[in-house]
Length: 193
Image 1 (spheres, rainbow, N blue to C red):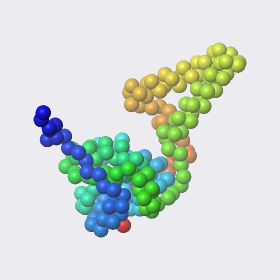
Image 2: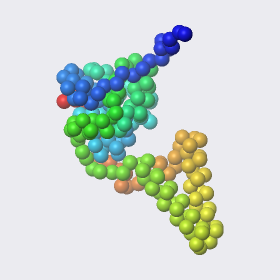
Image 3: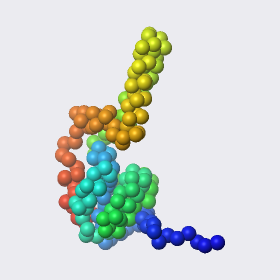
Image 4: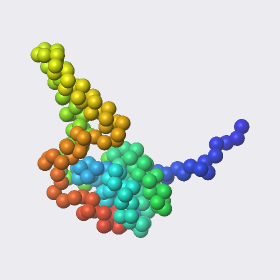
């Protein structure tokens, strides 16, 4: 029985939170979460370039120092690292993301607490479906159109990758940041304590 070949696949290297914190060399911390998530909390001196914009804006990623890609749990960071691998970078992924960083007792820079867009979508859809079902059951069956509307919207979002509700919520006044974190942070080149 032959061993599986790994020559056609590249595996992104993981770095443990404690190892990253102890790293004294020049390091670029690239946070691929949304600007709202980044504004809520992030590792000091990290830069924010959301996963959805990474492909089009990879040239803004500094090439000086070791590049470490960060997200909440490590999943988006891994996808971001693979995107950057295809662009000539040699990124590492923070193993376990910010959840592991916090669990290790390492410092986070905290900002204004905001509910991520994904959770806002879940709340709006959940409330809409529950309200529609209750009104349809107790008031008039025509109210069942409301959960059908939300179901159709979720199906459309799943098929196309475009969530109209997410776009609308992203423009809501409570989701506006004082200063765009991407533009403010992307020029920093050497990071990490």
